[in-house]
Length: 112
Length: 177
Image 1 (cartoon, each protein chain N blue to C red):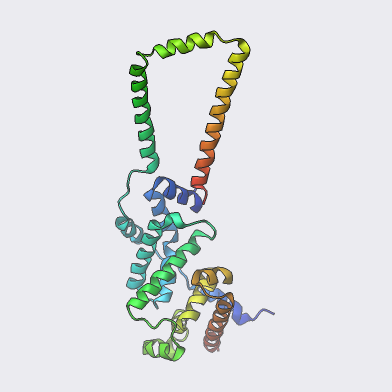
Image 2: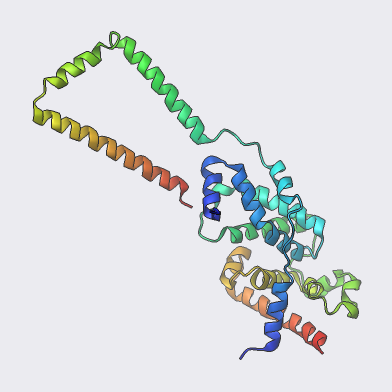
């Protein structure tokens, strides 16, 4: 049984919660937040890029100025078709697994 | 398309996006400030100071938000904790019996001429009843959510809501006549 006074009280309690204008409140909060550091994803991208460039430079000079690329092409061109197919399949599978792992790791980061 | 609270939270947590946090503050500032105004009995300046502290604390601890409850419920919990810490500092009579609390009430609020003011009536309730009624009847929390937020048994919340409402109904009945 609905008590009319209960309904009146509920209505009055809901009505008595007017919206409070922001009136600069959010700005005051934002001023007090700690200074924003560079986001970790930006730092991470920079570190990976720098490490890649450094690795390429080291590999270039350590391998007799890129001769390893010539050697690699020579070896690959000497493979039989089945061996070449298996190599391509293994590389593709490895990249797919790495990509899936990265995507799942990112999903874990953003799941609340 | 407006971003949901979850989208904004993801941006704050993953990218440290303070603009996203600002949008969250804009969305939730009114109910948080309203809750604190009820708790501190309409001391607007104090309520806003506590509300600022609430959001700053929320930003610092944003990674501890697990998404098990609504973001607003999590904010209310922080707000309530901030209020309690401040009350202890100001030697507020928290959780004390009704007689002592009534002794603290400004005589002006008991003026029969103001009986029709529901907010004054709410301010006259003991803290535990006022908190329960505000959270459940004004802020729309379930009894279960309020119990977890206040860290008290569910039965206690229900009792506080019931008693608070009974007292308010008595005042309303008097106004209605």
